[in-house]
Length: 639
Ligand code: ADP
Image (cartoon, rainbow, N blue to C red; front, side, top):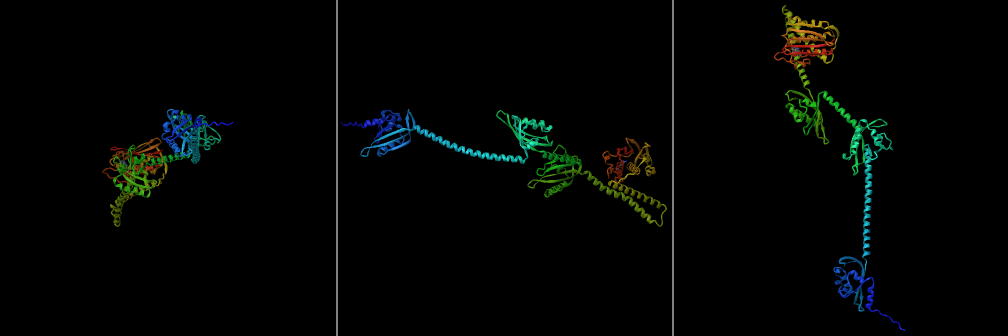
């Protein structure tokens, strides 16, 4: 029996091939005519069977511009095979251009003569696979990036951590260096935490937790309410959370007070509630003490300056602005409520001193020495005054003189005393000269007639010499008295005596002249405890003055009366009287009231000596006078 082999035609083979689920198509020719395409391939293209027989580019126009047609042409010409994996193709499906990915093969099927018979195109849609792979890759890439970022953040974090540790160490160092206490209040629990130093100050053990009330209890009573109010204020959102208050704490263990400055800040949540309140505490006891001491020293200095009528100033050498104390303005006769600057100062200083002052200031600045000057000024009321000023320059860091600080002092009185002293010396010489000249001429005459003395002239010349001698010795006595008083050497020989007796018997030289009546009136029984000779000297002086300055008042009244626990003795004349403005100065040393037109001799010492004697007895001396009516000079002595 013969076996029958059933051969399949090439068409049959093709049809079978085309049944494959794999997309398959067959092309021929230069134009890549679609000879056949199975359903799977037609589905890729979204085309029907009708396209068979058309060139591929016509059948699937969306391939235009893509590399596939060229590849197929190459295969057709060479007969080689081109394969691709994950090849991207854009095809129009459901009316939309969409991207797909294929694994494909263009296989050239050759004729026995080597020419290309057809091209077998097989393709598998790997879009799903491709995309998931791509997604995976993307994910992977992202993961790598994230990882890298994570690493970087980690590094940053480490850096920040080390920075933080460093800042914390620095902060701790600063806290320790500044000897600060630190505190942190939890507003919810009202409990404090604090460093050891703070706890030490509040008299707490290091491990102890601090209740707010426990801390405030340690605050001095006088400060407590103020501090509590400040804490409450800071914890209110509207306050901005700032806290800055000074108070005293009294250590409950040692009872040692400590003045502290607390500074802090409250932090708030979005509901504007305080969630944290922390800050520092600084011990300012020493600082405060130093400040108080400085204030006290300044006050003491001010007191001394005021007591001595020293004005002080602080002159800005650049602007000429001058800070002056009240006394300084008073010294220059200036209103207290108006500024008194350098140009104003120069205005009141008499022009002849300007050059000198300028030189003194420049000199002090140049050599960093004390500036010293005495000059005359004119007050707004035109009166002239003497000022002594001293100052010291102050320099800045660059060594430039920027200020001059110092004092001013009104030396008018002492300048006048100096003037009076000068006057006194010339007056004293003049006063002595008259009796000395008289005495000299009397002695010359006596000398001439010593061999043949004239009986009329002799007693006259002796009398004249005696008077001159008396005058000289009285002047010398005054001078001696003054110098003794200056040295505090006025000694009193006190005894109890009847003062009216003294008044009745005194001044025999005046009573003898018959020109004046000394009229006594008063308590004849009063006795005083005093130096009888000295009191006699005072009375004689007052009576002599009455005679000298009230020559036309023949009656001089002497009186004594009890006034309190003193005896008041008065000498009254009906002379010209004394101007009220001169009265307060009469008892000053060298003071002599001028009387226009009339020259009285005298040293201006009598009343001064009298006042010193009375003062030494513990009494008072004074003068009442009315111009045109007369004067009463009086003094008191303790009984
Ligand atoms: P002196 O008489 O040497 O000038 P005093 O100290 O005794 O010095 O007197 C001071 C001044 O007081 C006198 O210069 C005179 O101007 C005035 N004075 C004193 N007594 C009288 C008086 N009774 N009446 C008017 N002026 C007087």
